[in-house]
Image 1 (cartoon, one colour):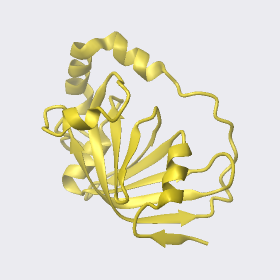
Image 2: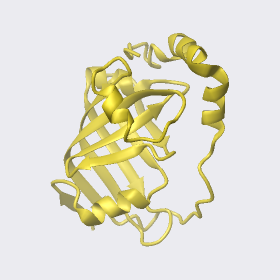
Image 3: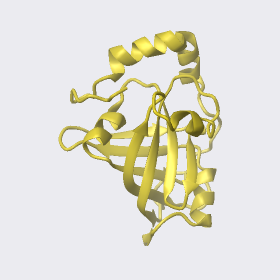
Length: 178
């Protein structure tokens, strides 16, 4: 049922662009595996073998810590409406922070979202499509705005303080380089 691709073709790009959310999976050399749901128009296809996603401030920063030890990442998309499909992008990723030279140019590809803390770039090794016939159907109503409201209320200085207090170490006590 599954099919492997060396990169993204027009059909797979179209599928990704239709999705309202995606999931990111990473793991360090040891410790916890992390899977995070993402949304808010935060993913861009850069090429057949490259995607970037804007990471917003959250309760943890596991992805950043994991990539410092082990750059492997998987991104998964599921069709929750229409024809069933699961699409996984496998590859190696890196984090770009506001202090990095690429940040300013890459950030222009995304809508202005408060609390942006990293842009992750995934160099895709291969893509795997599978049936998704067991994924339930859901009707999309809207993106949630609570995270944006929270970040706006905190402000730039409040977000910086929050990063120091909660985002500098992973659940396993590993540095995130925020």
